[in-house]
Length: 112
Image (cartoon, rainbow, N blue to C red; front, top):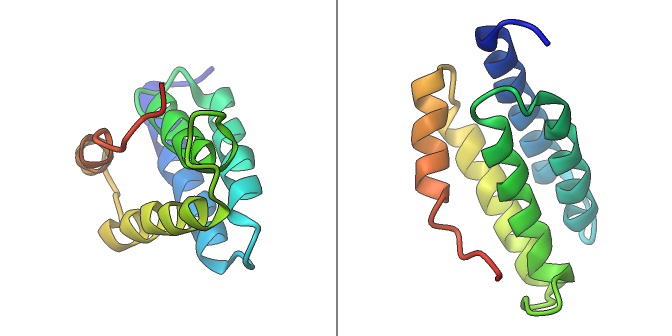
């Protein structure tokens, strides 16, 4: 699929695109954007951080749609924007930057 450095750059770029979309979303749009955003990473799964990005955005959507989740659109929106804001604020430019971001968010409560 291409060299690993290029795939990682695509993950960083995609994560930034999804995050900007989250921040400019109208109320009620974050859930759909989290689902669409997660799907964008499936084409990049050969990159180290693509799977982590996929899981993170799916965890956000689970706050609304998982039967054992909070089933709260408000919570989904709050967390989606929080993730996006943190990504854009930390502005990961390198593999190590992204690794720190995903390590920080690996403690996101997962619904089992």
